[in-house]
Amino acid sequence: MAAKEDLQLLGLAVSPFAIRVRIALNLKGVSYENLEQNLMDKSELLLKSNPVHKKVPVLIHGGKPICESLVILQYVDEVWTAAPSILPAEPYNRAVARFWAGFVDDKLFPSMVGILKATTEEERAAKVSETLAAMGKLEEAFAERASGKPFFGGDSIGYVDLALGSTLIWLEAVRRMFGVAFIDAGETPLLAAWAERFREAEAANGELPDADIAVEFGRTLQARWAAASAAAN
Ligand SMILES: N[C@@H](CCC(=O)N[C@@H](CS)C(=O)NCC(=O)O)C(=O)O
Image (cartoon, rainbow, N blue to C red; front, side):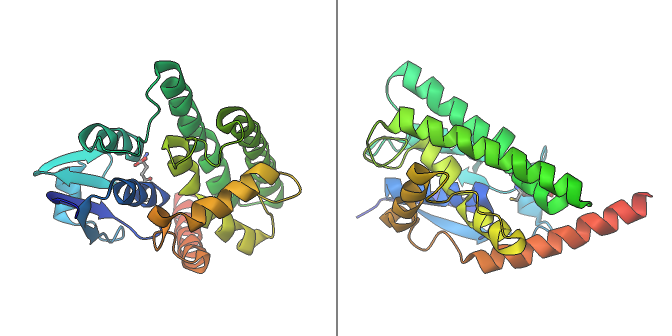
C-alpha cells in the first residue's frame, strides 16, 4: 500500500509536462492530490507556487513548490528512491538521459508547436521538416541507448521515456489536424514499437487522454495566437 503523502500536483490533463509527472508518480506508486488548473484564469495557488513562469506543472510537497517538469522528475526520483529508478545510476548515462530529455523539450516540442503556430504553408512545412528531423535523431538515440531493451531507460520507463512519451498525445493531435505522422512504422520503426509499449505501460494507463481533447485545445490555442498577432499588428 502506497504511503499517503502531503503532495499536490497543479496540472492539466492535456499538458505533456504534467502528464510526465503523473506517470512518474504512478511509477513510484506515490499517491497525490491532482489539482486541475484553468490556464485561462490562473489560480492564486498556481501564481504563488510558480511566480516566475506561472505554468503547470507544479508539485507541492509538504507545502514546498517544485517547478519545471524535468526538475520535478529528478526530485521525484531522489525523494522516492524505490525502484524503478527514473534516471540511470551511472553518471555518464545520467548525463546522456538529461541530454535527450532536454532535446525533446528544446527541439522536438517547440518545432511541433511551431506547426500549430505557423501562419503560412511555407512556415508550417518548415516546422514539419524540423519535427521530422528531430524525431529521426530520437530514433537513432533509441537504437543506441535502449540497445535492444524495451525503453530508453532499459527494462522500465525512465527519464527520456517520460519526456518523449508525454508528447505522444500532441504528436497524435498534430497528425489528426495536419495529416503528418511523426512516429510511424516505416520511418521510425523502433519508436513506433516503443510508443505502443509506452501507451500500454501500467503507469501510463489513464494518463494519456484521447488526442481529440488535445486537438480541441490546439484549436483554442491557435485562435488565441491568431488574435494576439492580429492585436499586435
Ligand atoms: N518548461 C516547463 C513548461 C511548462 C508549460 O509550458 N506549461 C504550460 C502548459 S503545457 C503552461 O502552464 N502554460 C501557461 C502559460 O504559458 O501561461 C516545464 O517543463 O514544466
